[in-house]
Image (tube, rainbow, N blue to C red; front, top):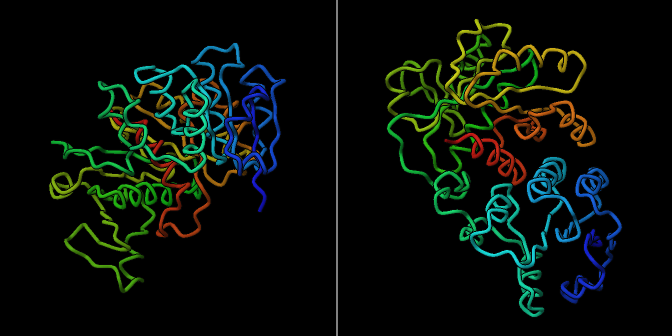
Length: 343
């Protein structure tokens, strides 16, 4: 497969590319000088292996560039490399870039050093490789959920997952969130707070299911609970509550101080039910929106529809088996979803 690079930078900066990349296919794009127009152009550009962006060509503010990069990351899995020559440790832009999940950037004006930085970016970096760019006072909040283990908190973090309508994937997403936490080494459990009866079926159908007490069953390495009791509150760091379809529960059941994840969809009857629920949770402390069963081509339109809530909007990968291992793409998405919710 031929690598194709989108090189959004002055042509003379092609010298930063390693020789092997210069011999591959690339598109040099330097005529677009508005970051939002660039992101709009790239929204369906799935054919690129790398997108390299020199931020110096844009007159936009750093905040505008970061907002646009958020949209790009939300709608594309293509590797993004940022040329930000002149910026260094302590620059808030780099801190926020890392928080977006962009770890690959070129900073040096010295040609040999910049070339080496570009080579390292193409090989790929992890969060631990750029941890020095995270502001000291924010480091505990910004440690990656899937790379670092936090200290045990006195009180568990409770996340309530609510769907806009039936069969929107609420249970699947609640279980995937739980699985992500468990695979990262956290003590997390799923709690069925709806009337679906899925846990009863699991206990009755799957012989591998192991019941450890009156309310808790273990299946596929997940602790599945029918209620939050004293045992649950003491045993887990994270409690993921699946409330199912919000129309089936009294709204005052939801706790405005808990982290809330709304599971939504893009079909007409699903979108129609989203605004009333958004109104209900408008004053909640921490709300995120997770869209499931979404075609990649729809994502930009959904972000537009979400207006001021677009920064709180995420897109789930298709997961026909809710108990399957998480893909790398899923880990990255759930990382952002939970990390951006943590206090």
